[in-house]
Figure 1 (cartoon, rainbow, N blue to C red):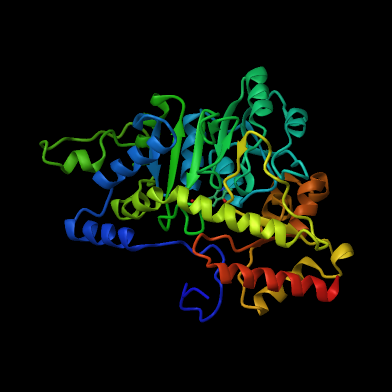
Figure 2 (tube, rainbow, N blue to C red):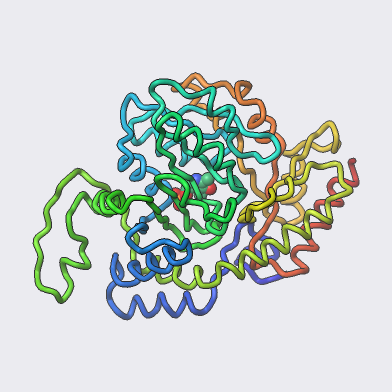
Length: 392
Ligand SMILES: *Cc1c(COP(=O)(O)O)cnc(C)c1O
C-alpha cells in the first residue's frame, strides 16, 4: 500500500496527489514574502484559461467553488424573489449559494442512469419567477447541455454550471464550464486539481469577470497586488459591498503544478474507473453507466449502487465493512431534500425526487485518487468482492 497518510494502512478517500514541484513552488512563495493575491494567482488564472481554451479575461480565481457560485449568482443579477433550478444530487454548497444570493432554490430530479439533472424535470419546474438553471456535472459526467441550453434560450434563463467535478469534462467537443453564462470550479483537497481550498469562475462575458473580481475583494476597484506593487501608489475605491473571496498566491502555487498534471491524473483515474467497471461486472450491484458518446467523462467519482434487496447487504453495512477493511469510502450524495434545514424552509420531501432519493440511499463512492497504486486498487476490489459475495 502507498504511504498516503499518517493513518497507518488506511486508504484515505480522495487523497490529493501532491508532488515536489508544488512543494518547491510553495517554498518559493514563502521565501518571496508575497503570500496573498499576486503574480502566482495571475499565472494560475492564465494557465487555467488556456486549459479551458479561453482568454485570461474570462476567468477569475477565488477561494472556493462555493464563493464562485455565490458571486456568479450575484453577477447574473439573481436575488430575492428569483428562483434557481438545481439538482438534489449535489453537495449542499450548490444550494446554499442560491440561498446566500437571496434567491429560492427549486429542485428538479435527476435521470436515474446519468444521475444528472433531468431536462424534462427542469422544464416542468420553470415558473414566471425562474431566473437560472444551475446544473451539476455529477461525478464528472456532463449534463445534457443541448437540452438545458435549449431551455435557457426558450425561457431567457441564465445558466451557471457547477463544474466542481468537471475540470476535464467535455460535451460534444466543448469543455464543461463554457456552455453557460458562468462555470464554477473547485480545488478543494479531494477534487481533480487541489489547492487545499480554492475555486475558479469562468464567464462568457468579460464584464462579468470584471464584476466578479471586484465582488471577490471587498468591492474594491484595484486589487492589493496593483495597489502595493512597484507601479506607484494607487488609491482604491469601494464600489459595492463585496466579499472576501480572493485566492492567495500560496494556493495558486499548488494549483499551477497540479494543473500541469491534470491530464495525467485524468488518465490514471480513467484506468482505475475502467478496472472497477470490469471487476464488478458479475456482482449484484449497479455500476455507473458507460460515458455517453461524444462526451468526455471527468472520472471524478466512481459510485456503486448497493440495493439491499439484491445484495443482501445494506448500503450502510457496506460502508462499515469497507471501512473495517481499511478502505475510505464516501457517499455522494444523500438527496438534498433529506436535510432538515431545507425540508423545514422549503417544504421539500425526498419522495418528490424519487430518483435522487433512491440513489442517495444506495450510493457508495470508492477511492479514485490518481495516487492509488495497482495494489491499492486490487485491495479495493477484493474488499468489494468479499463484502458482497459473502452475502449476495
Ligand atoms: C466540492 C463541491 C462544491 C464546493 O466546492 P468548495 O470549493 O469546497 O467550495 C460545490 N459543488 C459540488 C458539486 C462539489 O462537489
